[in-house]
Length: 276
Image (cartoon, rainbow, N blue to C red; front, side, top):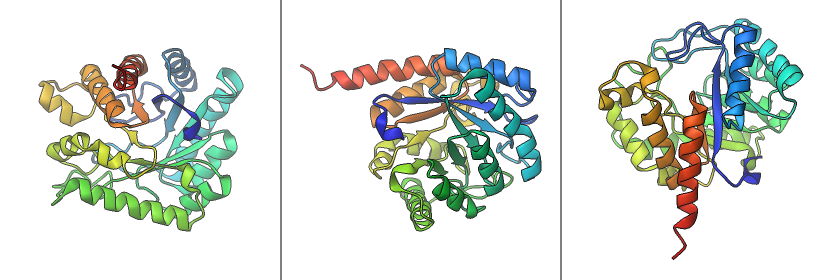
């Protein structure tokens, strides 16, 4: 699916949760969710990522039934009232939620555990012949920031992602349906995040589309001396531009308009690098 696109793709975040770290409670009614989807599409989003469970640090898992109750009505309403064509991703680590979302009209699975928590999610992706995002995370959302440690973060993340790839392929997922995400902010120290961003080219070298999710992350707040996530729009756009230059293809963001601009300008510069 992603091999047919020739420019960076923007994935707009839609959290239909009461407790997500940046926008919890803002879009957890159907009307508010649809308004946000329309805004993100107007601002240049290529796809919408819908999540019914917060995976912020210290968050508690949400049952499959609750996730389904949150995300399925939104997916169906988008298809009926907003767009029959827009790509929809479901952000879940549970196979039952992923299956229900695909049946309701979603196109993509986005699993923050890379298929580790519920390996059946890989079978769901294989049977549906749909793309799946495999992310790296050390620990669980509840524990991931309890003193995470790496000897060589880039090599360890790459090795873990390769293991997830191997599991997906063994489950029948096609290579062209696999997207990888280094999991910025998920079980990483601030320096780990910066090191991964400095070596995105090595992740791109794995020969899979890379999704980058830095949007409003706390490690940038420490660098910019701000505490409110909504004040990190410009910082996020800087990482988007960096990612484009490194070869990253997908960007998961809260603020679509600003990151669409950053991606498009960086893409134009990247394409001009071979000109003289």
